Image 1: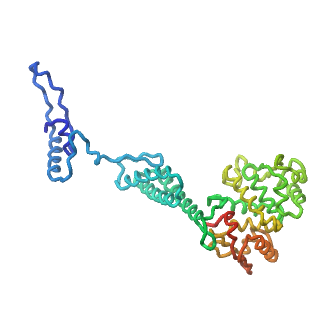
Image 2: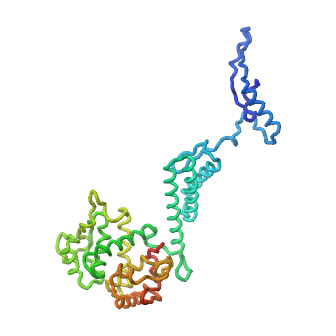
Image 3: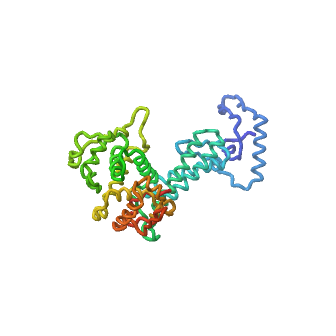
Length: 393
């Protein structure tokens, strides 16, 4: 069918198969040649005419393209979404998710519950996309989205958890992320297996020095870092660690304990120094190490512990308990208490000493309703110290 360009644009599903050449000057006496449409073009136009005759849809104005029929363009996770992607519902879901993630990034305040929901949808959509396209990279992206959803959900749960009584504002913790809590537990477990000297005091010193030197094997320490731990004889303990080769000092133990913040002592823990075939025992980064060290220092130097003159044994127990609570501060997984044999592997004290340490921590307003049975330590950390806890998953 021969028609003008405006009529062709107004005909649904019509295709232009040939274009007429420019009209000749009427004065030149020549005839204008027009290409005859093909049989396929006639079939397409006839189909379009039948559909237009039976359709109740509004016909677009002449000269305008039917924009509602054009596939949407989209982008998500730095990937373009093909307009030919099938099934269509998957393409539409990916486009909508891309829009929602970009809108989330413009929020003034984070909403971790919403972020977890978006990541869950992304994980499902990318998994389906991987099945359709066979792209393994999409499947890895789906796994990362699922992990991100889990992390965001845990952060939301911990940030909105309340006190043990279920009232009051959400707990704002010094270490904010579940990954940081896992790193804190990893350092405690490493020190428990690699302390060169027996006893809780040696383990506490090894823990604090490990946190200072965790990634490079080298760190700075001042005298107050050790003398404020409630140790019986800090100088003798530092000398014995140096004699064992676990600790390397530039001078004597007395010089280390006399050092001030303006002139700290550089120490070395050789077992933590990375080598070409051994990057070290820890997986956290440079930004996390000082956060973990600051958290531990905050715990052991709590003003209530200092005022009560709590021993080094009790301070090691405090660090251990802070990493072994539920979100509301109850001891043990799901708040069901801590097995004494397992607790002894983290904090090497016998049953009789544990009773005394629990009494010290109760007086220092760290523990409440604590009971030591033949197999478990039950109770909870007080609301005052909940910000210093690293809840179990």
